[in-house]
Image 1 (spheres, rainbow, N blue to C red):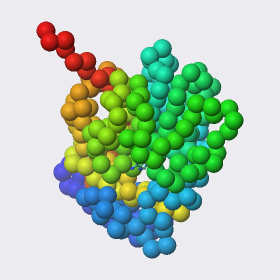
Image 2 (image 1 turned 60 degrees about the horizontal axis):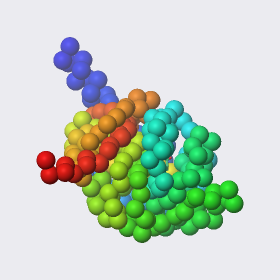
Image 3 (image 1 turned 180 degrees about the vertical axis):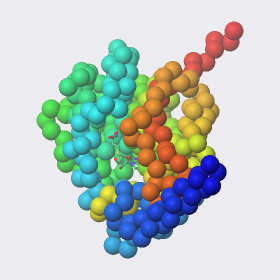
Image 4 (image 1 turned 120 degrees about the vertical axis):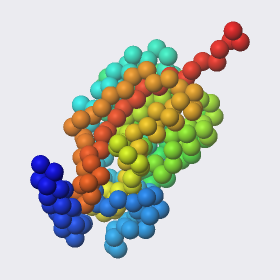
Length: 260
Ligand SMILES: C[S@@+](CC[C@H](N)C(=O)[O-])C[C@H]1O[C@@H](n2cnc3c(N)ncnc32)[C@H](O)[C@@H]1O
């Protein structure tokens, strides 16, 4: 039995090494200790990272749809709607989820502020339609006015730093934080490279306790969480690192006790 497992493991490793020789064919390749290490390994001729004008179009129309894994977010946005007059959408790209959710939410009465990298903010501003009356953009989170809710859908894999470093510069702590597509693993954090066709982008698979610990440190209680089974995958060049798990969280700021 043990021999069979060892042979299987060896075969997976050999296949991983073989795949590493054909990097252009893989969505994910490599396993690095840091974002900088991953950036330094981007192949010649490829753009490095997300912040490029030509990267803004990659998957934009797909992100403007509402896939199954957006429904927990939509559910919570609808449930919290009476409490929301301003939302900050970190990693909101060109306003993709504003457009996707418009059909379901009354966004006429919610200020929706996208925080993203300069390339996406430029593209987003160029794409604003007359009906996007409540959509605006900032390149620095600290420039966003105080909001009731911080949404970070699909941001965490691309963010070099921690959730704490993301949230602390905000003008005021939002009452709610909604996170989706937080990519995690059972083990230490690993950075891989995602192939965008025109670019390779560092992609952080975080140790599974990291985000709950960050929410705790920021003073939030997790009131809901989920796993998106269908998105899980391994890194083909490093199958031994196992399958990653995509997670979502809803967290509410712990109110200060009134001295009791
Ligand atoms: C996969 S997209 C997510 C789009 C959308 N929120 C969704 O859920 O489909 C990731 C976004 O994170 C943004 N991003 C990457 N690094 C960032 C950073 N350091 N600060 C802000 N946004 C960043 C990218 O520019 C991109 O728009």
